View (cartoon, rainbow, N blue to C red):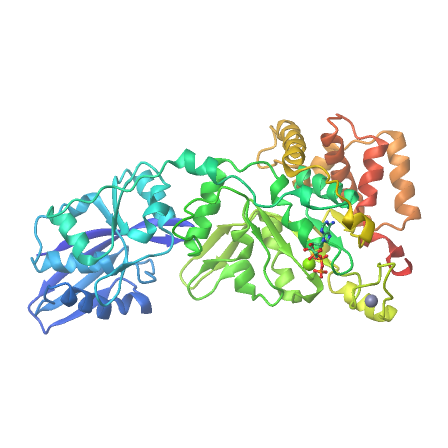
Length: 513
Ligand SMILES: Nc1ncnc2c1ncn2[C@@H]1O[C@H](COP(=O)(O)OP(=O)(O)OP(=O)(O)O)[C@@H](O)[C@H]1O
Ligand SMILES: [Mg+2]
Ligand SMILES: [Zn+2]
């Protein structure tokens, strides 16, 4: 007989229904898989054959054809083992009367019939819910992750035999349930806080402004000045994630296979800090088994590039698309796929190769041309997309040993959220615009009008400080954010002055400091 089992595949971060048909014919015994299977799917043969035998069934003494539909979509990975095995046992009538149409089945099989976890289960469960499919049989390790989708009954299985007994009604499995809102509220806390950082009020303020307008930020300072420590705390002052945002970020981590079975929902904003040796595919996504890159793993959170000049030029060039579009598109042989990638970029670097150029307590051993060459590595298009630059000074012993701590993350987050609300209401009529950092020239003209005082101040700064032309728009956007933090409708001179301070790298004076 012909048996049909439904499973799912993931493309980008969305899942698709896959139909798996098993048919037997009177030809030489063997197993053929058709319907654009990749290497891992073809290897399914060996795993399925062994698993079936080791669970006490027989591999049919006839030719078995497995057809996977739709035929024009490449099937990848090892997650189809379980539905293939079940289809095959149905087709050979070793198990009967299984109501398979009602289920999505997924799981990799090991040779002894154990069901192993697969990637992207959350995306699949969300798709099943959208399609009105009510039941899924999943590897037990993926059960918690799948249950986050809510509305689909999740049946966890440990072995092929367990799955079969469940389908034939010989044993019962309780659907796995999760208290989603409980889980969400419980997991919403950060382990670190801004109050751990002593002194550095100027940098904390710059991070507050960056967070409030979603501006990318660059920190330059000597080793040990706390750049990494400060950057790590940036997600803690961004507005709380909504449940929908949390699900979206979780889906990406699920597709990348990065969720551990005890953390089914990422309820806090991600902070990703890839090493400078990262490859293009690692940062942007792609590869022979496409997976989301660091830009997507930081979706709704912060991507931190430490020691920026050490990253290859090519890798940095690749950041342009996600920084502009909030997503990455990856071209593949048969189709292209895209991953969301809307993140705040924070970068850090030393002021020179030895690190101590701006440190008053150490002598810098670099020659001017070395410093120039070092700084030149980060110039250009990437720098163009960073609105705020700050110099992080090394703290003195007295500052470090002081007991008082500054504002904590919760109160900073409140200020950020208030400023974000003002932006949302201002941009109501401009679809797709949510924060000051993403304003284009026409928005800047409309929303950042300057009175005469402000115009004079800005003109003066540009001429006297030798600020570059590209600094102009950035200063206006940041000034808008500062005004929003203060709840002011119009930009004032104090807001412009503050924004000018955040252009350290634009000042021609950098080399003559
Ligand atoms: N403002 C501060 N308050 C409290 N501790 C600090 C502060 N600044 C630095 N530290 C301490 O110094 C350590 C080093 O800081 P961090 O690694 O963030 O410096 P960095 O600027 O990133 O240095 P590098 O250039 O070497 O990467 C931190 O782990 C922290 O313990
Ligand atoms: Mg560091
Ligand atoms: Zn130096």
